[in-house]
Image (cartoon, rainbow, N blue to C red):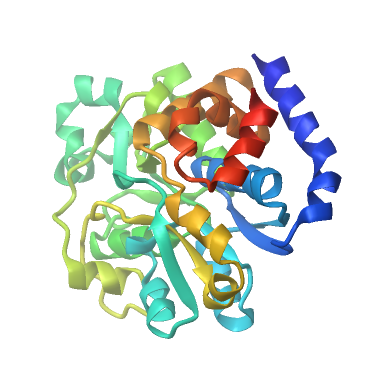
Length: 322
């Protein structure tokens, strides 16, 4: 299977020059956020835009806060894939200012953000499924909260929640991972050793599909508290769980005006959590690239993506992937 996918990626690369000859799409910049599901979305969108619509796509590695800041200040990148809008206070302001246009829900059934412990820890110590239980026994989770990297929206929110909960005084150290990959690896390593682990993660991911985790009950969702907790300037943080996440693709207003056909495509690109979880698990199990994961999705879910494209683009991709 991987040879087939690699061949499809190579064939696509060879056709890019031909696509440029009839392209009217032009240059497009698109984020590749630094977590796996977002990178898959970018790879799928890039493949379709290049092979179906003749675009010349530049991938811009980024994360949520820097990408939104860049768009606000420079109007670029053109496209932001997999923005977790609930966790990003600046997002609504950019919409209101007309700098950003929301195109569609890229995760159709939303995303999940939460604090977790491994299922084996919950089975042996059920009290750890609540914040109060963890604070009574911080050593049972290793005395550490595994947090997301700097620059992610969850970085600010988790930190403010931990301040409001007086976690450090209670014996819990906040440990920020340098990347999504090392945060993922810490869960895998904990499972290998059946070791303590407590921290932040999200779904859909291959990790939560492969390693069963249990949510820790911290508090209910409070809209005002959550909004303040999302700000680096929150003077008085208070506790709020994450709401069900609205996960979208968005684009600059200039790009929306310039490329209506591509915008129509992007507004249709949407994955269920189950589909994305399957793609991510396949990529993990096969040590595949994001480009290969994109082709795996396109060859596995042709009935899904066929409805995203206009007729001409659909014919081009079908011929390439058959």
